[in-house]
Structure formats: structure tokens, C-alpha cells
Image 1 (spheres, one colour):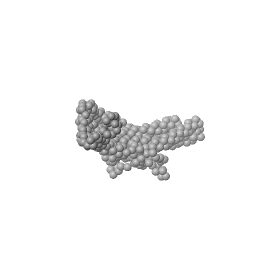
Image 2: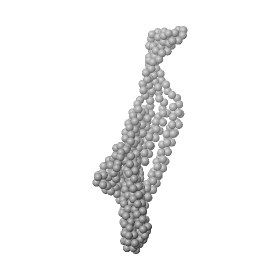
Image 3: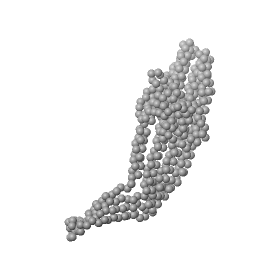
Image 4: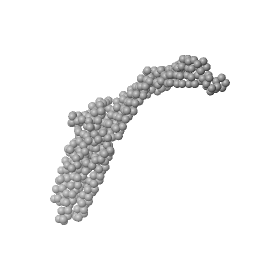
Length: 425
């Protein structure tokens, strides 16, 4: 998966979220694309990844180094007793040595370091997806609060209308004073609920801005209640193989294979050699000296590491199978919730809300005509508010499931249909 594809992996939800929303001309709304761009640019987790890459690159260079040359000097037969008193019989030896290392061992060591470096690319893709998904969730929370505030605004207007109608009926002697007071209390409660939502929205905006360490005071742009068409479950399952989670198993397999080769290479002993010259003080002569040493039992000592590396490699296929099953189960759960929430949103929009709105208007007319009690009208207003809030909650849950599906599949399929020329922030 390319960096562009990874960055777009959650960005596709802009197709349904980043649409015109409630905003004043003086305060432009925050677009989801802007939130993504700011997070990708400023989040510390992404800024430290190049440093990790540099550190792992240094480990590759270190692993590729050959054994060091060793220069030595030694004195013998000096400062003793008898004939060896002083330096008359001193022998000075100058030597040069190193280790003849197996080429296979060095190549395996380098491959281990390179595998760790390659795994960082997969980790970076996964981290980018997780961060963008978290941005989308926080953005969605604010958008849902804004929609709920709009629902309370509509309810507040209805309750003020009801309080005004109740006041007129009380003035005409058609209703007791308690009805007007109850209607005014309902208005006050709606005002309080609206104020609490405004405070929660401000807190949500601050929480969103923490993703890039900044500040934001404006609303967010989006249409929460717009639901896009999405692929079926079987189509989504086919996309799982390209996810960073499963690609991580491929990177881990390369790393474990390299560790196994390195363990096998340890069975070949390193040969240490040394060559030099020695000066014999007694005769004033120089002589060539040298030596070779080979450790014994290298294969026996390497056997435990080989068995362990082989077992870890064999276990990886089962780990990948278990991981794939977990991903599929998570995908199935998210897809099922998304389908159920989508049905709830669409049914509410097409049937429930229109019926309740007609009923509320009819109740208003009947109350003014004296054919309906205030409590019956207020009950319909409360039911209409509950239906609006339920629709908002279902739409929010739909998009949350959709974000999770997109994080799992890492495919910007909706964005590709809606905005084919979109670029990575």
C-alpha cells in the first residue's frame, strides 16, 4: 500500500461528512480534509517515524560491518628476578589479527536489520490509518452534537410556540394558569439542554484540535444524515489481504526467516587469526609469529537458537490465520451494525419523522381550536424530538461503523466514486 493510499484510507468519509453545514459567514467551518492535513503534518507519532527509520537504517549499516582489525603489543620476560631482572631478556611482540566471519552470517545479520526497517513501513501505514480514523471519530462526535443542537433549536421553536398559544388561551380564560407555567418551564428546559449541547460541542472541538496540537473555535462542516452507498460484505472481505495488519504478518515472516538463517549461521564457527613479529632481546633477533583459534561445539550451542527460530516461524502462519479470523469477525460486526443503523436512518427519514411532524402540526391546530389538551401536544413534541435524536444517533453509529470498516480494509472506495481527483492532504 502506498503512502497516498494509506492517507486516503480514512479520508473517503469526507464524501459524506465534508459537505456544507451550519456556519456563519464570519466563522468558516473546519473541513475534515483540513483536520486530516493538520494531523498528518503535526502529530508527534508521525513526526518521530523518520527518526525511527534513521535509527533502523543505522542498524543496517552496523550489521553490514566486517569484523574489526585488532592491533596488539605485548611484553614478556620483563621486570622479573634473577636473569630476568630488568629488561635484558624482554621479548616484545607486535601483532595484527581479526576474525574470519562466515559470509552467510553477515548476510543473515543484515537481513534481520533490513527486515526491521521494512516492517517500519507497515507500522507507519497502520499508525497513519489509526490516527486518521481517530480524527474522523472526533470530527463525527462534533458533527453529531451540532445536528442534535439543530434538533433542539427546532424543538425550542415549537415549545415557544406552544407557550405562546397557552398564554393566549389562559388570557381568554380557556385554560388554567398552570398550563402556561408548564409550557414556560418546558421552554426553559429546552434552553438549558441547548446550552449544555453548546458546551459539549466546544469541548468536542477542543478534543478534535488536540490531534494536531492546535486550537479551533469554529463549527465543523458536514452532513451527518447523508448515507453513502457501500460495498457488500463479501466485497469487503476480499480487501482484507491488503490491510496493514495482515501485511504486517508478511513483514514479520521475513524477519523470522532472517532470524532462522542467522541462527543457522551461528553453527559455523568464526576463525580467529593473529600474525606478528617478536623481538628476542637476548640475541637482538626478530622472529615471525602467528596463530589460529577455532571454537569447538559451535553447532551444538547453536541448536537451541535454531529450534526456537524455527518454532517461531512455524507459529506465524497460525498467528496470521487467527489474525485474519479476528479481522473478519470485526468486519462482520461493523458491517452488520452499519446495515442496521442505515435502515434506521432511512426509515426514520421516510416514515417516522414525516408522520410525527404532521401529527405535531395537527396537534397545534387542534390545541388552538380547543380540541386537544396541552399535554397531548407537548407529548407529540417530545416524541418528535426523541425521533430526531434517535435518527442522529443512528446516523452517527452508521458513520462510526463505516470508519471502522474503512480502517480495516484501507480502501477509499466511497471517495473514489465521489471525488476521483482528490489528493492526499
